[in-house]
Image (cartoon, rainbow, N blue to C red):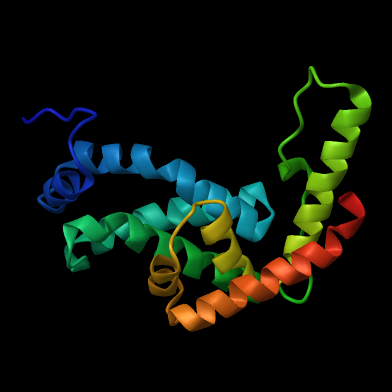
Length: 184
């Protein structure tokens, strides 16, 4: 049995996982689950739904691993699967978007109470504003602003061209800026 260490790259782990090495796949999950969960939580605004989506994505990825053409494309493949599954959940529950205030990260407990209340209000307003974006705008904005992905990477993930991605992000930024004006 081969050992897996922190310096083993993702492509090597994917190759091993494709050959049936469960430990290699577990390491890939450990390395990427935080990013996928954060994306799903922000897209769905519901922790429980996000947990379900991420679990389904990793199960599906394990089953479909032989279909992945390039070992080095694993992370972008996961982003695409997570984004698409979240979009499906959002479309299924339209027209209402369930914004769960318990999913908002709480401000530091050692902060001044008035500052903590302000930050909490800002986060709540931002989550509500995210809920007003189209699912496609929300996906593009989150991938850009939270995960720092390039327009090309986002285009690949959401299945659009970079011009469409730029437009979605620009419209999302404008809409969010308008809604967040009172918090400036």
